[in-house]
Image (tube, rainbow, N blue to C red; front, top):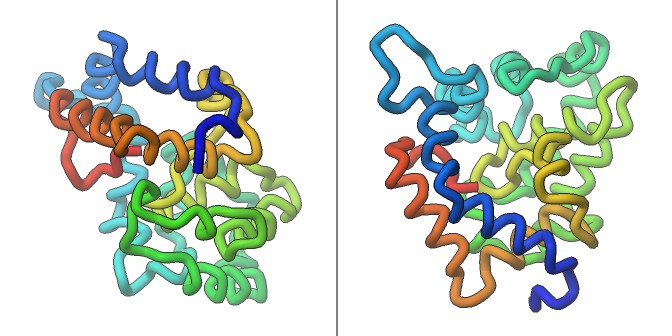
Length: 205
């Protein structure tokens, strides 16, 4: 897929953030790398790894109470009625069926674009969550990022402010950007993670 179908400013902004000297500083601060003993990073640094991660095999296809706590580290809270429906009701069963159809062990860079496209199980799960009362697109995206951190990166108001609103979607725009030029951007992200000293278990996106 060519980047020509996406607004160029998205790619330019993304590259600028990765290449900027502040990137390493911000990553180290966020994840608590090099901070004095007893000084923690941001709570969001625990998002992927809390309780072993949301994509570990035994829980990968269902949203658990641990996942609901994990999204709180990113400053959002799933409304109690929706949380109960996820844990004990029909909504949870519907989401489990969709999660089962979303690859667990693949990075966005390696996935086919169809995995992220309109109508895909990932897209259906996002819409199902987004349409719940008082959930919206931010919480929906963070829940799915918790379940598939390698495939579905967080896209919230902070990221939108920094990178804009690419078309046809953030997932597809980022997927195309990561694969362009023999995956040059993906390699830059991996290098940035290494230089910053962030654990390799943290997804590069």
